[in-house]
Image: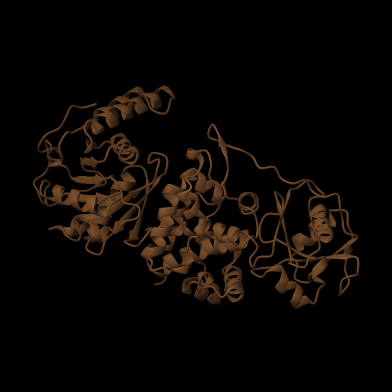
Length: 521
């Protein structure tokens, strides 16, 4: 690790000389030696940049650099870096004890506390020190880049440069244009992001940018489902993991990120969009936060934890019950018909169900009650089954308010007959997986509609930043834009809540038969 730098970097070209951020020798300043800041230092040093690290805490920068040096040695010991690579990266970064030591930097990235006043004050100090062609970048995740830059003498050289934690692992960075940002500055940051080994995507300065904006549907819709009493939180998690393919469910994720982090973000984005219904939080997380039930780090959130390990919630065993026969709605997909044929109960192929048949519908966006009423079925012996997603890992059976316990148990026993677990939920327009995935796709469509980012960048950013089973626009194409539109329109009609109104981007492409990734000329 180098010693403290002071003054201008040797060999810097004269002020005003255009720099190629993809290839030129660059000196980077990083303000903030916390986890995010040091993650940026690590990837920059490994990419060959000289890095100066400042932290307002006495000794903070030195401690961060020492810890990073240990990390690089550990990466070498694990075979991730050669001895030469580890030594070279360690030699490229050093702590500095005063902001003045960043005077000769080509780029300064701040990674300090998420407080607008603190960021504005820092950039005002930096502007008095650095050259006029030095780029000032903020790693803010939720604040307005425009507001950070507005009071500066040269706001055009300020942009967002939002990394995700842990920076060396999360290989995406958002380069954000404020209203006053020179487009060339953002282009330079895109080049720098790629140089640092990340996928760099471009976004307009809007609340949440791309990734945090696109992620609003997962947790908030899961909370909405819970608030309606449709299913317990652990059942929502199981369905979204096993049926829709998410790595973790929304309640597991909120426990991991902790509600003292995730709830303020939910409220902030909701308020910044002037109470946009699509992003509406639920009161439960505010109550849990007040009670200190913030998640894994507190030992209790939605789940309980022992030594950091989530305590399992047992599933109820499948009832030992079967119907005499199964009648399937005429629009039931072939996959459901084929499944029932393997479960040992005869199919009732009559135009109307026999008196001893379980009636099964397969809604797309509707609730079971609506389907039963439309088909004139006996609600006491009717259930719905999720069929838009994978039927091999878990099945979802949805009752009507009139379904009797005996018929519910018969349906549960039937669909668990081959050993696949079954989750039984109460009536819901869109079941669970349909409504969550449709909400995610719809929000991504509206990000595209608002021209916050290109469709390709939206999917790239979400793929790398959120690790969903599929990027949202591609997922909408997989399900079919018309299918997603139908789910949303039916939920909107049932609830009367503008939360579910379809984005114009989705509606037009569904009507025209276009891909949701199709941009306009």
